[in-house]
Image (cartoon, rainbow, N blue to C red; front, side, top):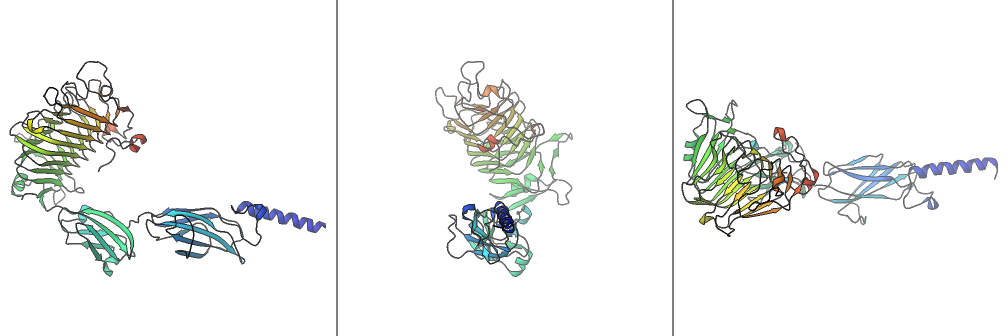
Length: 525
């Protein structure tokens, strides 16, 4: 071999080494490099963007003029059989974006280099699109009792809106609605849940669930609320709304002495008093349930004075629901004053925040043995800085109340200084008989002093604990003093919930263990 040939040989091998290092073929080692092929793209990956778009990335420094990309839908096994669903040729560079794929679909994706009459082996990857969502959020302003107005990006490729829930119907979009990105679906029923899915042919592009408004009676600050309630028909809703001129959203009242007073409203029929979630109001009112067979209040910020109970169970039946409310300042949340014998089937307290109330008084107080409550459900609530020097929940035996069940789960209790008889002062008052059961599950009890016990009464009924966590609440877990009649959670665990800003009322749980285990008031249902 002459000198010129030796130099050419060395240079050729060096160039080959550089090419292999930059773009190797995982299936072909150096011992089997095919000089008539380009090197396979390396580091090939597919990332999902905007739920239904793919971003393809790869590396390759071979002499490729372009790349070919193929996608095979519903090919989780990556068999790459038959005709590709989509094919893109003359792709020039990485990254490469593919938009508008079918939602909730697994694609097998492959890419090869092409150039100078040659091509490479395929590099492969797989990715799945998510459910597409082009619907915009639906606000209360877009919802009435009989219609819902839906919005999406103007000019999107869409054909119909499929309706399920309260009714099943396919709504064909007009050219004007497609161009505007807006359609109003009418002919709906009051206070009914519907699901709307926007389609492009057979392809779903977004889904929203909406509940229509109740057939409500509007009430504004300064209106005679008692008169509106008295004139409401059975099953109707009185909706508290901000003043039309925007001047106030407060239903706040003063007595004759100009001191703060709480407006007492008597409910004698099955009605609801609510507020639109997007139009919050503050109200200093209280309810006396006298003759009602159901009652619901929702989305209101209640601010009372310490002598008041937000709800008095004077003479009522059926179901009482309190949802998405905030309350502060009241003496009790619910009290049974012992005036008339009645039976309440169920009380539901959900997704709410109660704070700085019930000083020297109980949060729920049913001890007069007149109004019997069969079931109490309380979940996804936070109660803070309350019940100092009293009890949290008290129930006494009532002949009509045999079998009382308390379902208390996914709540956060912070600084509940129930130092009288206990957090759950629940007793049958019948020797040896355990008529009541309290299921206490997945709650957080934090910052309760050593004087706070679950119950200090030997007659307390079945308090059943499961997956509760405690932080600086020693006497709920152990029995430092000994003695009979005190109840503790022997299964509980200690862990700091890492509240975001408890001092300023933000009880967002940040401890990853608690979040993973679904403990405390971590999310509304």
